[in-house]
Amino acid sequence: KNILPEQLPRRQLFKEILPGAAPLLKTLEAIAKENDKTMAQTAINWTIAKGGVPIPGSKNLQQAQENLGAVGWSLKPDAVAELDLAASK
Figure (tube, rainbow, N blue to C red):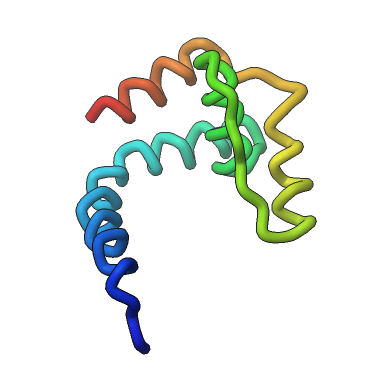
């Protein structure tokens, strides 16, 4: 596979960041299951709960429809705090 030079820094960045994201991803997965939502829906809802404006990406109609499942409900304050704590590690 031929890798363009501009892709190399991005690849290195992800190699450095992703291992540290494991605690957050585990917490996100657990909270998503508790709420019968996907991890993406939970992450989008968490962003909204924090006062942010999420800009989720979608590669196809199915992903766009999944993203819509992030609205119309709210994470409980303790779930937001748990995600915040996991993100701070």
